Image 1 (cartoon, rainbow, N blue to C red):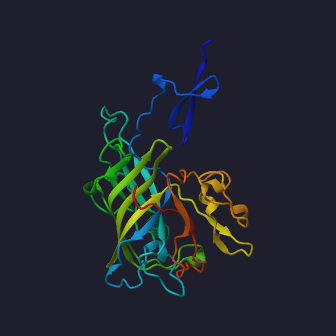
Image 2: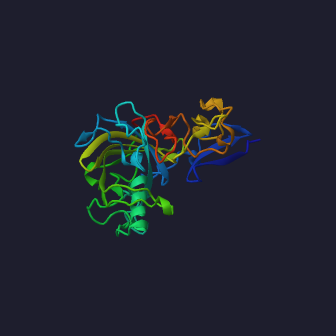
Image 3: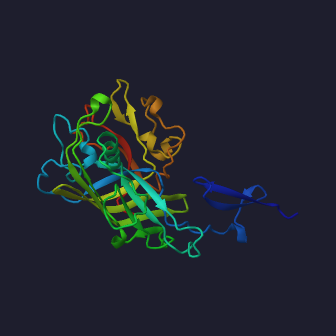
Length: 335
């Protein structure tokens, strides 16, 4: 009797990408069927989710008044009694961002070969815009990306992909000459904490300029656009610093507490699935309810290695907090 062939569709990441497995007589075998071929390559895109960015400083800050400069998000509400800490080599620093993809009009006859685009918005800058709108009505506004002009007066940076599909290594590139930077001027913010609003903030101009953007599309694991690598120059007023940046989406915190209630790193939150020692992320016996049970949505550690680390310098507590924010930071610095 000829064995009955059953085709099983295994779906990864929200049923967007599938791989056919051919099963004969209850056992997985290799069967040469047309339907059991590889799936088409996905379009160039980023995971449209909040993401965490790990910074590798490229030299110290340069310019005027840079002695104790740190990225703007680390300055929120002041840097504590011990002052700010300069972003020197070896300092663990990260920031939260939002990533978004944009695709050609599906009614366009060239939609299949026309590249899409992507945007990167810094969470702190976006919040500063909203605070300004809500509390001092400075008239800031959001233009729906992609921007219709080359002005950098946007809380996000935007750029088109070079091609509709990734190259043979699964990498999508954004040409440097196509990237529109983000540069926003913010008026001084009076203190509104007594009314439940933001703390006082000085007048400032903040710019994020991106280059060498590369997006990883790993169709084998289903990790589509969850890892992005780029170079970044942050300029605030007269001070600038360069960074190599690695993004990981979705942003996943790994804050835990010890038995005394002190904040600690809980690496089990970074597992990408139900925590297990096989993931090299052992469950903390004292992590309590912070232990990740249902999975973070992160790709497998073998695809996107990461660590649980504090994105704030230890000497820079914010707004009277402990100065800790443990996040699942990517450890790769290049695709």
